[in-house]
Length: 304
Figure 1: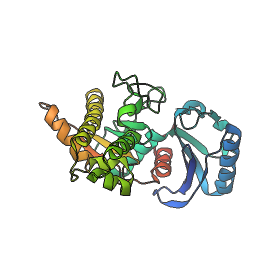
Figure 2: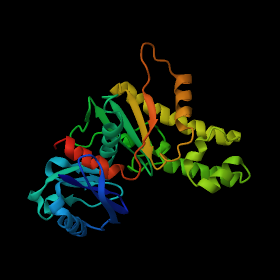
Figure 3: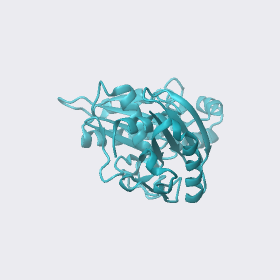
Figure 4: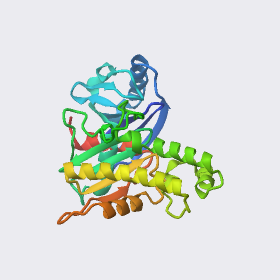
């Protein structure tokens, strides 16, 4: 049978019917409802419309979840709780609930890397930094919410807080929103620079990682700071989890420019690993459908 998957964001809910070969049979999206009552009503209607065609419902949520009790708890972009037991016809299908970072990691692992790696870590760069950890071929969940990589405290900087609300968090210095803000600041100071010209066209912070650009000294310093901060996070994660690969995704995955090469160059120049190989780094290959496909993959392959 098929899975009805939902990828819930702060502004949009994407959903689709996925078969067991991970083909999308249909998909659509709706604006994210503004409270629990409207959320349950909207999803119940979609489930009811597709009930005859599905055996599983799987939902990826942008924050903390209590999968054991089928509840969404909280997230910075969706700040109300949801009790999914209130969904209509709840006992007519198998229900699955997980964090969107876990779902993205599992999607990349299952579709691209399961025959090559058993241990990988995915980081998603956006307004904040999300993530998911695959350990020995399974998601590492801890008590339910492991993998919140962006919430690691990596700095003594008390001036800037990340999406998590924690000052000094990893995401406060490396999120894609930080790249964009830095580009805006730099181009305002020098509107004739090569960076300013390409940023005006692309309007994505990842242009800072275009190694072909002739950057000014201040632009180079800004890029090096971001690259070193990301490298520090990857190195710390490697020492803790001894993973085989990193997958970098999020809003920049369609235009990463030379991010991987810059990270590898920085890591190789600053750190040596006698008898150990630093994990390979890849850019996520799944696009905007990764949430609904990953949710289906979890539903078909893991039980809560």
